Length: 99
Image 1 (spheres, rainbow, N blue to C red):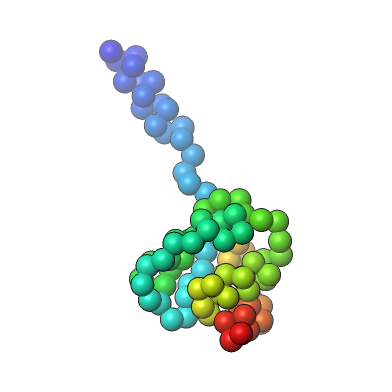
Image 2: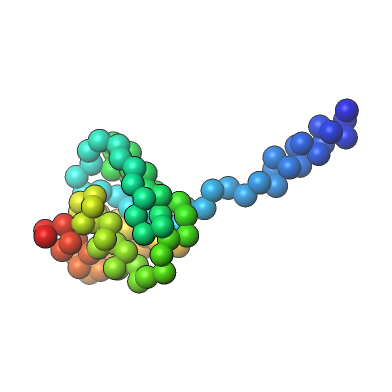
C-alpha cells in the first residue's frame, strides 16, 4: 500500500505544468472569451488577461500579434515564449485593430 502511494505521488509530481506559449493584455477588457487561433488555444478573462496554450503555427511574433489583435482588439502587452514585444512593435501590432 505504501509503495502504491509513493508511486502515485511521484507520478503526480512528474507531470509537467501546462505550457503557456503566448500571453497578452487587452487594452479594452470585456467579457471572457475563448478562441483557437493559429494553433493556440486562447483564453481571455474579463479583466483583459489572455493566455495561449499549444505550440501554435510557426510565424513571426509580430504577425501572430496582428492576427490576435484583429480578432480580440488592441493590446497593451503581447509576449511569446517569454519575450515581450517592444512599444514600437505593439504600435505596429495594434494597427490591425483599426482595420
